[in-house]
Image (cartoon, rainbow, N blue to C red; front, side):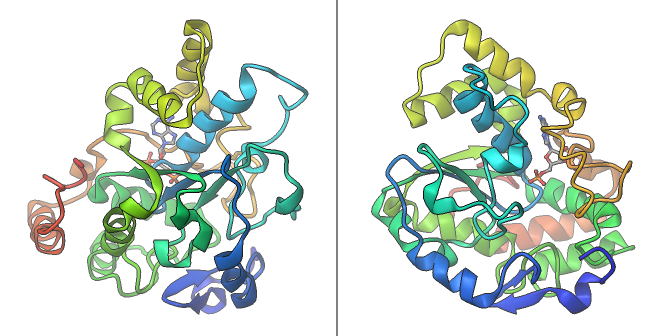
Length: 294
Ligand code: A3P
């Protein structure tokens, strides 16, 4: 996995790119019939939208306040990837409530999720910041093709053509559109990265409310405190520091800058205008007022 460039080794299946060492077409197809429990919780994101952040928040809500011997468990084992079973867990025998993460587009997700069986939390982020975050991430990640020029990455991001992140047919626009327009089929909470940044406490309360979890004021304080950028950055368990199969050791890990509007530091006025134009065209029938402000 480490030595091969993504260009050659990622495989395309039903419009999406996957890593062969961790998935194969049969496994992806089998997920359609993945047996869902009512108590399951899925974090659904387009890559670079705050997945690790939400994984950590859920992990804190469900495990941290009662440290029942799980204090050393990695986040990836608490909220494992549905499509990438990194640590070869037996998902079927995990105790409830099971927490999962996925980047899958809605049409590849388990069918039973559509019966409102599980709870789904979709985290969306301003796509300009998503593109910029991905641009930096791709420089340090083994698993992605490096795109040296932001303009090239942006063109791919906007057109949905070429391997930006895990996507082929399914661009950022398709991903959010799919989940959003089918939202009535799911028990789903849409949250934005921006609202989490603005008021993390309120966001955590909203999440708890959705999950039917009641935390004491003290427990809530702990979750909010531990989910701040700086605290997560210095916690190897939540910053995926040891995931050297994904990132080069010692480089920017999943927690890079963690701000809203970082795109302003890299995009030219012309690029930003082009981005707005495409966004407005592709999202015109959806109630997303402005780029990423859902
Ligand atoms: P930046 O690259 O803009 O810093 P994902 O987990 O989906 O790969 O998303 C990664 C992005 O979420 C990174 O964005 C990362 O810094 C940001 N992030 C992770 N944890 C965060 C936190 N606690 N607060 C703010 N941003 C966070």
